[in-house]
Length: 421
Image 1 (tube, rainbow, N blue to C red):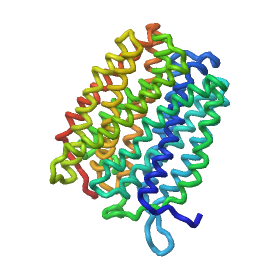
Image 2 (image 1 turned 30 degrees about the horizontal axis):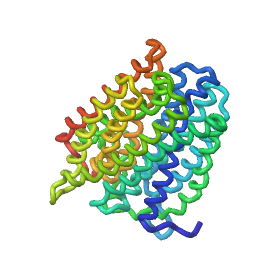
Image 3 (image 1 turned 45 degrees about the vertical axis):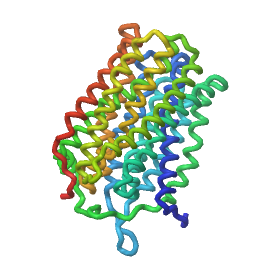
């Protein structure tokens, strides 16, 4: 592997392609969940937990990947480098194999274990890939480059639903997992060929460790507000797609493959439009002469305002008796939520010292998934079991969106700490 991928735009393309496969694997499970729920005899609460189980591996291991990603290791010639590309390669390979293994499950326990392994693999990639893009992108283009990277979320998520629905209908739900696991194995072989970006100024500052690192992050109140709002946001964004196919299948009496197809179409259109428009509008809202701190605060405010729009749309999608109105409302809601995708990640990376960026991403991932989409699918399922109404269980989601918007808007004037100690 002597050849290296060194062109920044090419590296961005490779990382985006892998992120695309990441989200296909992540949301495929929701697309086929009604079928494996029936075959494996699971309750709604158990099904919800299998959907979110990958978050256990995801958030539990992300701090370790964040710590390793911030470390500098000496190499021949005396230069310092990171091992981010190797950590990501191992992670991509692990989640791909675990996705295929999900198709071998014969009960709740085996399915949960396979999904936890998926989460461990995803943790390395989701923690480290944005820091490489942050190193490569010119300061004025960070938001746009991250927007390209995060376009993989709606496109990959939508294909997860579309692919899951088609494969399940023709070959069964197990085949869907087998097919989805393949591309990641091939992509894992490409990751080690990525040239590590050269450390920028302050990246070789004294390495803050353990509790001291958490304390350094906690001193940036704006970062804390960003993560708190992102936790509520993730609660909702994890709960909706986890149960939308079942909601359409059960409440609106739609055929599962049809529900998966149209939810996938709406998600990809809303996600593409929302992510691109959000990045463009967030940049347009900046003053002509803008320092980094102003940019960070304006991005946080934009994310809060965009999320406000999603609240009534989310409520309408659950209230309406019409499936057509459901899709219209979900489209508006998803456009509003995806609009904050790249700006809010710029806030995470820009609101902390540069030497702690991977740690900041890891802490954010740990928090938002521990209290967010690890909790929401099984909680919704439990409420649905108790009340015998999936619609009742899903009413908690508009509340979570409103909380995210409130916290982000309230955090705009919070203290910001970006300097390395």
